[in-house]
Image 1 (cartoon, one colour):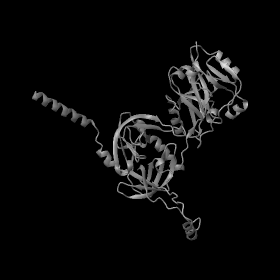
Image 2 (cartoon, rainbow, N blue to C red):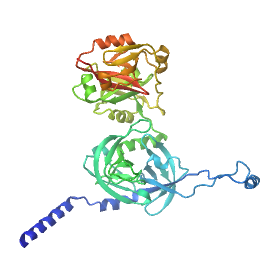
Image 3 (tube, rainbow, N blue to C red):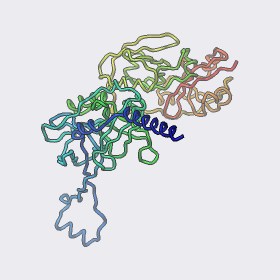
Image 4 (tube, one colour):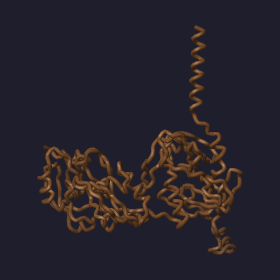
Length: 458
């Protein structure tokens, strides 16, 4: 019995030792790269004046005439994030939200040296900012290639979470190409998802691979509490360095622009459009005056590739288009009415503000529909305001229409990929629909055009 216990303990020890041998040793990587990571603090001046008594106000008027009084500054620097050095002469890369709105930026190095920095350029859409300090001979990060990253690969972060300088955390790449739309519903960054512990203060810090190369910039966490919950996101370094190149040259970033509103192609929509499988980006609106309109794209087209890059999910298209330069001719492969076509069009430049949105519809006479729809005409004045040439409004939905997700107030502009001009035209198209098949319906709901798959009853 004692012999068996000894053998068991030996086997357990050997197993633990072997497992430990397989884990990476990060000590050398940290020693070589800590000096190129910096802590970034900012100072924001704010008006701290409070209501005063009349006598005190009279004192200030006599000794500090209007126009000469300045509010006392918030002179205590607030540690907001991290960054890393990308050139010997003082260029530093960080997140835009770390330095946005700052009156002064203070950079602290690993040897405790502190220098003021200026913003060279910032790009809110990618949440990147390029700043510079007056220095020379600084240690520089080795830039890797994020496109070579593999899911499951070990990565390491160095930053200042909660102001604790040069904290090191490690984990693996959980996924690539994550789409995280902004408040403006834009998604121009294919984020790297990791399980590396990232907390407030890590923002802007580098994400290293095991070769000591920077392959990402830590940017966001997914959290219900404000602290790390096992999911964090980094901006790929390939994207970041393209932004840096433009910020150095002009202080701003120019992105390619198609001028379409797109949505995901799910299984039901794929069937309704005659696709063998779900893939591509479904165009549900072509903006007036856009490169897409000039190039011949239509609502109902499904974009399956952009410049020979396959589009599996709709979220991939903005990443590819946004990284292209304005004025460059792009090649698109589309599926239209079941036929595969190739379009060549010149990309425009992404505007600074989102295009105007659609308003709600008006009312007219009621006409029932055999698809479970109660519909009404819309006035020409409303169509002009909505910038549409036809359409009917839903005032009731049940049966197949309700199951498809069509709601009261929706405006139907296309049915089975044919434009709906009015109620009579809708009825004409509906009578010719194939029984037992799903067909696409384009609706305008609130401010967003959306395709829905409607199964025609047998």
